[in-house]
Image (cartoon, rainbow, N blue to C red; front, side):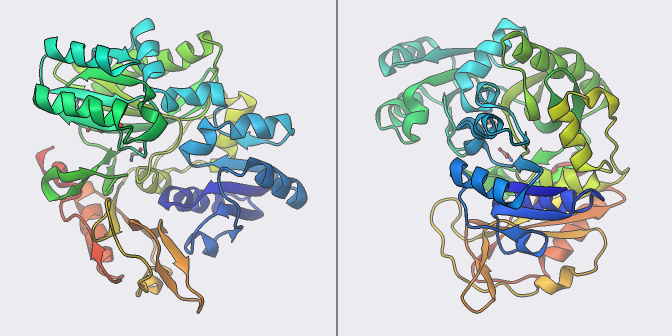
Length: 424
Ligand code: AMP
Ligand code: GLY
């Protein structure tokens, strides 16, 4: 098979590495890709939102299957576009991708189908939201309705902060159109767990659990980022939690989407909070998490192409997912200053250290070739260094060891990825 992967981050590199292991994969393309993905795939300079050009490329190269890594093209209807052109593509159509692209939709869905989540109200104008805040209990969480690169969530401790927050989202439109609507929800406490799944419209298959570290600085301080590191599995995701979620969250979500006339095919990412009252849904994403994919996919034993095709064909009930009985940790190497302001263009040294090292991965996110065939930094998150180990502690040690193999200007990382493991 010939495969096209759409996207350019660490997640897409992890997807490409997983696809490359499949005996069915003859040739892999990635649009637009990055300098690391280029070692596994032919990168083509077409943007993820250029549906027409992507479809033309797929026809020209006779590509059999397109896999979409990112949220924007899914929310924009890339799947609908490809299906109209009779091209095979893995991911939810626009009607189903709304599970991620509208938080108001997802909250209403959970309420209607009794799926556990934080209590909330949706608002379409700032006046109503402000009036509500005067009577609400603090802290409170404000969420811009639409896609906001994981940054459209404000946790407000006081009414003053909440008033400011409403202004930021709905009046100043800091997150753009995403702030045309807003969800105001109850603040929950507990451990967070990410659970990725494959879905074929009716059947859902759960992958091994993981945990992200969203804040920029050690000790969960600093700004929210796309994710600074992950570990898998989560020791807090117990058998009881799993049973509860299967019964009350996973299958009910798939059934709810089907009942709404929006059957979901692709990846559902459940962002869960393990509260004192049981697991609750923080958010849904309609794609692999990044950097969650960088610890989950290297541990998956299944043939990625087989599973993706089963999702498209509606035959996922014939597949059981299998994961290695080990652990993985990913430490993100970022550019100092991320997520606000950072420099790019520094040469990355030491990448060859990963060659031939079983169980170690250097997933590229923001990297590119400069004019002289050198790989340089090209983004906030630069590399995801993943290592496996027999235990989480061993994987963490390995990942931090490997994080020292590469160097670049303004290299920045958190030093406490997986600290929670010690409390398990
Ligand atoms: P989201 O994009 O909805 O996952 O929100 C980003 C982050 O904000 C989550 O990973 C949580 O750390 C935090 N968060 C979101 N909603 C809540 C909530 N209701 N209570 C506490 N923290 C939350
Ligand atoms: N790591 C969180 C996300 O991919 O949204």
